[in-house]
Length: 80
Image 1: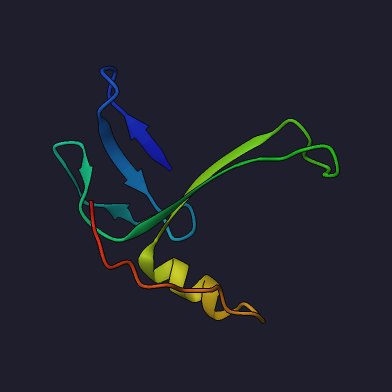
Image 2: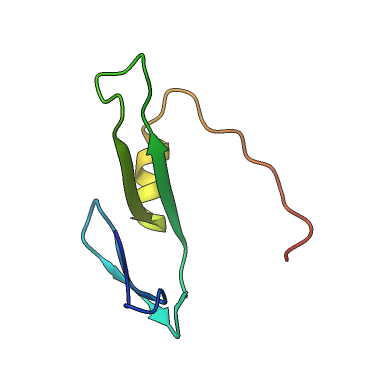
């Protein structure tokens, strides 16, 4: 769960699963996290809803570890 200051600068990121408050310095998240923003559509019971949530890296690892089929992972060789 992200919170922003009135000027749009990132202020806080909290893991929606465990509640951990992640390190944010000068508007930049300083640790591993994943953010999900998903707009549900016609063939869903949530049609018209947009869900936003964040997970710390530890909760992400636990979630992915419970998958029957692991996500595809590729190495990024260039960072921008």
